[in-house]
Amino acid sequence: MGDARILTTHAGSLPRPPELTGLFTQRSLGKSVDEEALAAAGREAVAWVVAKQRAIGIDVISNGEQQRESFVLYLRRRLSGIGGQGDRAPFADIEHYPKFKQERTRFLAARQAVSNVALLPKCVGPVDYIGKTELDAECATFKAAYAVHAKGAVAPFFTAASPGILASIVKNEHYASFEAYIDAIAAALQIEYETIVGNGFNLQIDAPDLALERHVAFAQRPIADFQQFVEVVIAALNRALINVPQEKVRLHVCWGNYEGPHDQDVPLVDILPILQKAKVGGMYLPFANPRHAHEYKVLMRMPLADSQVLVAGVIDTVTNYIEHPEVVADRIERIVEVVGDPTRVMAGTDCGFDTSAGMGRVAEDVVWSKLAALVEGARIASRRLCG
Image (cartoon, rainbow, N blue to C red; front, side):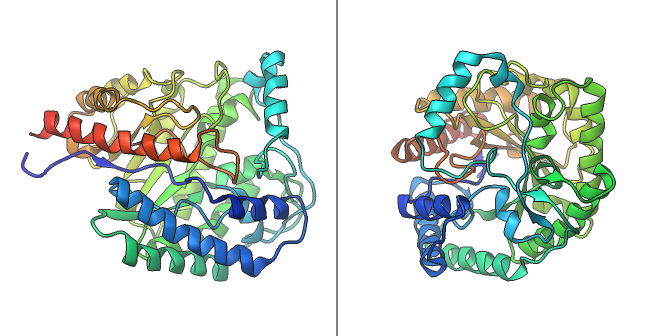
């Protein structure tokens, strides 16, 4: 197969420097921070994280979400109508194990971090996109860092939250229906999606809602209700992506990036037929964690479109085990066997390593070693699969 090989990537968020995490945490708690110092720290962190990814050998790299406090709650500054104090339904698997819940509560209380489940805003007015200036600056920072530090990279990607995860986390108290609410969010985020791709980046839509919400907002409801939710979100997402070339977009779906029981997770087989309606060029699914490592086999019965790429999570993001490169290679090879074409498989991490600032469970130095194992595992698999 000549020069063909398994490319490597990751799910977007990477550890932030402690100073930056501290500033984000203080701001999330409502305390005043030096916004100029925060902006400067964010720019420096982007240059650092881009160079670090290339030093390790990651092919398709991001800005590490260094200038955002959270993979989704950054939108509180980019959308109108978001404010006040909201709440979030509990996670069914955590509620099912009270001793585990106690341990987790103690652990989280001791961290300096931005929470995606506490101190949440809600929707109190019309949702419109007001964050273009901030987004343009974020794109410019990544573009500049990429030009200087990304020699040898294959492509840059940029993450953005799905309409559904924002609608799930930010409680609606303004719109007459969920459908009206998510349509408004999607219309607003269309500006963000098109701006990102217009700056020359590939777009990753982060949509944990499409699996996670089954054991959160829909934990006490029939599976059919959750599947209808997924249908509504996918339809709204497709409308938001109407002007974006399909091959420029990958959809990242997961069951929540936290170390927990996960025994209330929805099976992939129950949602994949709906996910496949998304007008995207790549599907990004986690196959390293022990609750879903077997589900790559679902793709034998429900294959992706011939034009689509599978980004397969083959590195766990919530434990400090460093996967052996041979383990990574074995995972890649099993998945390629199902997909049938190594050029349609990329190797990635299950999720981000720091999806909100300071919440990452994996130590920074271990993160980089895990990513190095990803790169080496992909090289081993490439030699076996591509010659």
